[in-house]
Length: 340
Figure 1 (cartoon, rainbow, N blue to C red):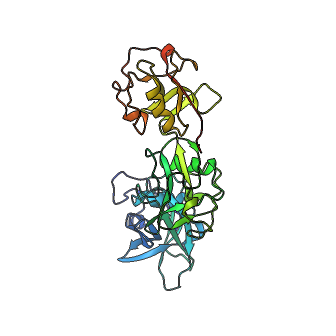
Figure 2: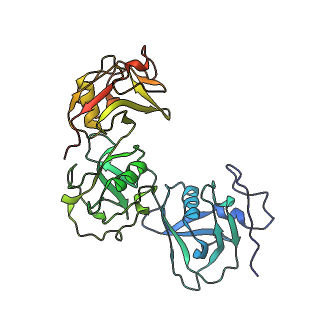
Figure 3: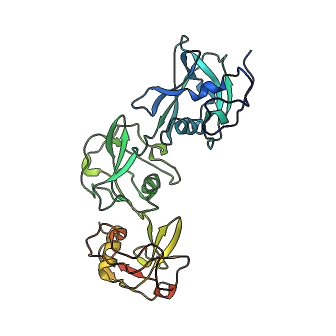
């Protein structure tokens, strides 16, 4: 007869779990590893008990539990939760594991230990910290060729079916705001190495590209002249105009959107911003809140650019939040538009 379902509140920094019933074995869940994968954040989920490593039965295995497992191991979010068949001689230490996804570690999930019948074992592929998706070859970190890390190597994404929804997931994953443009045809140069993903069809709400439907890893009908790219907003947006390449300049700082004062604002500053947004050359640099008064902080004042900076934040300016302006002086920009 199998053990009853046990839950255990997480104690920050604790390696044991005093509130749990004596001898329950839940503390063993702190001895966790991924085995047999392409890197340290991928493989079969195993826990150590009585000096031996055993697996987690995959019959209740799902993405929330995978996310908690990745978090427990100091890896990035779960990209894939799967299962693998094993022989009857393989130990299965965890009979079931049910998580909501927000738990700090596996001790907070519903766990049933020991006594599992023969079953496939849970596997997970987590993002390596800081190494899952990047934008390369662009003018700043929030624009460039889309590259993904898989099986220990960086590779590219084919532009077949690549569109703004796919770029939106990419921009979210690299923490660069929302997608402005999803160019293909190696807009930022041809990549090297494998073409890892082809036929991506994201809904746009996924947290990672690997959660979007696609052909299997490495299967494609492309070459590097078809490498996909993304241009993300970063921490800049244009508001108050129907054209995405014109409007009131707004920047994000300390999780709040605010505006830019028009003191010293001119075509060189607008040129840097238009290039940052993938909107071609600057046509105008209007001030005096042409596109309406903004709200919230006035974050930047006395912005002074040479015109060659890769993004607006590399230009000289006063300390964030220091200004002698009001929202009637909010800066705007008019760019030529998207460049192919």
